[in-house]
Amino acid sequence: MVVTDLTEQKRNEEMLAEEKLTTQILNQAAEIFVLCDPQGRILRASQSTSSLFGRSPLFQVFDEAFHLLYPDGMPFILLPAMSGKFLHAVEVNFKHGDNETYSFLLSANPLITHKGAIGIVVVMVDITERRKMEDSRQKDHDKLEQQVEERTLELRTALSEIKTLKDRLEAENIYLRHENKRRHHFAQILGQSDSLKYVLYRAEQVAPTNATVLILGETGTGKELIAFAIHDMSPRKERPMITVNCAALPGNLIESELFGREKGAFTGADTRRIGRFEVANGSTLCLDEIGELPLELQAKLLRVIQHNEFERLGSPHTIKVDVRIVATTNRNLEEEIRNGRFRQDLYYRLNVFPITVPPLRQRKEDIPLMVHAFVERYSRKLGKQITSIQKEAMKALQDYPWPGNVRELESIIERAVILCPGPVLQLADKLEISSPAFSSTVRTLEETERDQILKILSETRWRIEGKNGAAAILGIHPSTLRARMHKLGIVRPETKEPN
Image (cartoon, rainbow, N blue to C red; front, side, top):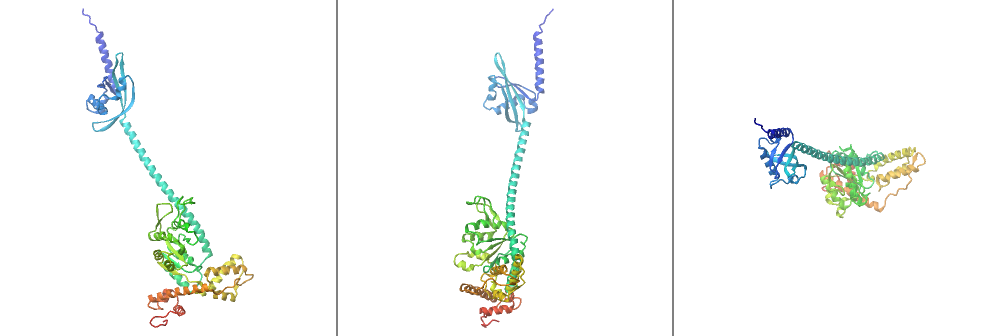
């Protein structure tokens, strides 16, 4: 009988069964298991590598992977495991095959016996899809951040625009209240004289356009009222006309008043301020007493009129505006140019459509109408019952030359109403007829009137009557024109007599 020792065979069978079970477990695992020798050479790998890397030979894949990761030899990432230390979850990336990048979390555990380290078990968890998702989320996050930044910038821009509009509306409200008081105070332009009718005719001609208007006349003649009339007859009438008195502000504040300022633009500029040009955007800006504008600001004003743009004080940003300019002055700007106090180029820009408002002494026929209107206004305001005016008082008012014009007349009537004890108005002031200084002013104005009439007569070839005659252009009756010519000594060159 033969006795066979099956112990070794059984042990081998058990080892094969264990190895088969281990292989099955490894192949079913999602992770990649790699067994390396102490030199880092791959001895065995789980089947999951094949599904990940396709048909490439298993060892070749990992040799290639390690070679790509560690071209200089033994992968240093495995060195800790070779010395008996564990390596946990180190992320590695490499490209393979279709040049696609793969990402893994790599852990290395040493196999140690009494003989020392006999190998290394490498576990690689494929995080490629997770990394792609994270990258995608990061891109979405970056895109969202960019959109947030863009929306934030848009909101900041919108808030800045809202702030500008708010400042502009607040400024407009101030000017509207000022304008309402002014219009209540000057309900209408009073008078029926030919000279006043001509002024209103000229205003009506230019009002529908965007042309710059220069209103000339002595102090107190109502130049600003004509400016209001032009604005009220213009397409811009839905918005308030903005007025700035160039003579009422110190020279160092006019620029800030006209063009605005940024916070900190100069000492004392604690807040941003919208200038009159911005407030008047889409409307009319009345530059009252333009002859008082400092010479250094005239160049900047010229630029705004030419290009419709400017910068606030302390700001590099250019602001575009749509503003119509109506300027007024009681100065002779041509004389100011000769004296070097006014820019000639600015004068040409302003003098597109000049209108001269006559002084009150040249339209004395309007005085009774104006006196009655002022008496009624201040009687109602002061609660008095004044029903008539002394004839002597009215004659004195008509004979007086009125150096202060309508403003002086209104002041005298208001004072007379205050002091009037009964229903009949008497003057409280003794009116002085003339003075040497005033007589000089009258002669200068008469010379101006004479030059204007001569200019129109020359343009019409001395034709007085008819549709295209000088009288029609001046807006006065032919007989009135002949009377003015006779008074001013105007004669036709050929006949030496007015025709």
